[in-house]
Amino acid sequence: MRMVLASGSPARLATLRAAGLDPAVLTSGIDEDAVAATLADATPARVAAVLSAAKCAAVAAVLHAPAPTLVVGCDSLLELDGARYGKPADADEAVVLWRRMRGRTGVLHTGHCVRLLPGGDERQAVASTTVHFADVSDAEVEAYVRSREPLAVAGAFTVDGLGGAYVRGVEGDPHNVVGISLPLLRDLIADLGTVWHTLWAHRGSR
Image (cartoon, rainbow, N blue to C red; front, top):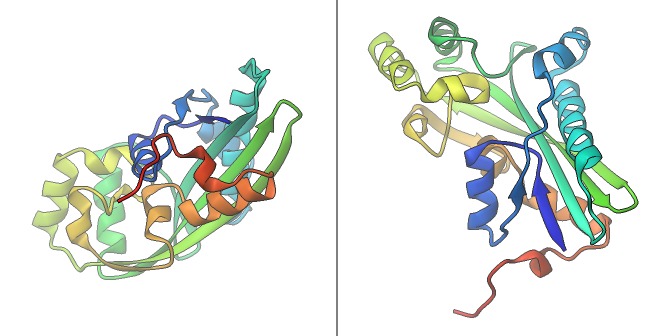
């Protein structure tokens, strides 16, 4: 069984590789902002679901897959006070967001869509993880944004990089905050008839 990750996120790829999988990577090229703009009244979780499905569909449409192939699309959004936040447009936006969320709690939603080729059988779901942010100072916010790490990720934060020190804790799957929920992905793949451990790239015993 071949797997293709419809995302250019290094964190998602690293998470899958650490779990024993070795997917190919093919980015979708969809205009995420344009898709999200059509969903102005949708919940952040719904937007994440639609975007993940759009990424999966775009990549599946260009793949020549005579052998069984799983295409995995994901998209993450932070929800704070009912509003949704993807990747900040620039450093100023990242600073504003961090000043808004420091010392508070948000929810990171990641939409997951898995399509089995050939045939096109598909499963979708959203994983949501509560994130408690540290009450960081203005100096810490500005230093973190200068690192440019927050500019590349939804909600302008990470838990697996420099931003990990600024997250006090999470409730739910921590992998989901990185951008892909391994337990949820396992369930979706199982529902398509594939057992998780058969996807391991390297097997052995300890």
